[in-house]
Image 1: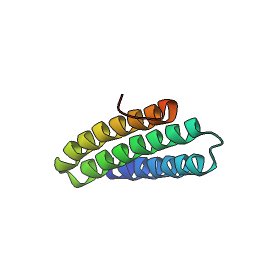
Image 2: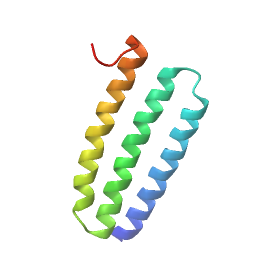
Image 3: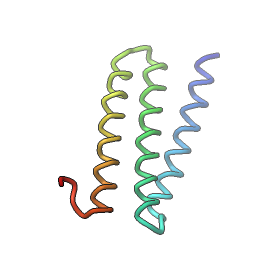
Length: 89
């Protein structure tokens, strides 16, 4: 029963990833594209966690944490670059 729920969750997260990629490509402004990239990072983290649950290994959870930290820092850096023109003050 849990396998069916995991497959459904993977399909929903995959669909969400595709919709975020469409927003990334069609986004009329830079802010929309940055938000789409951040959404894609969150979806990738969810997919990593779902794969870790499906295979029953803990290494995926640690990699999801590292990916979350890198995704947050890269989103902040990209926003600072768009707003100020530089990352380091």
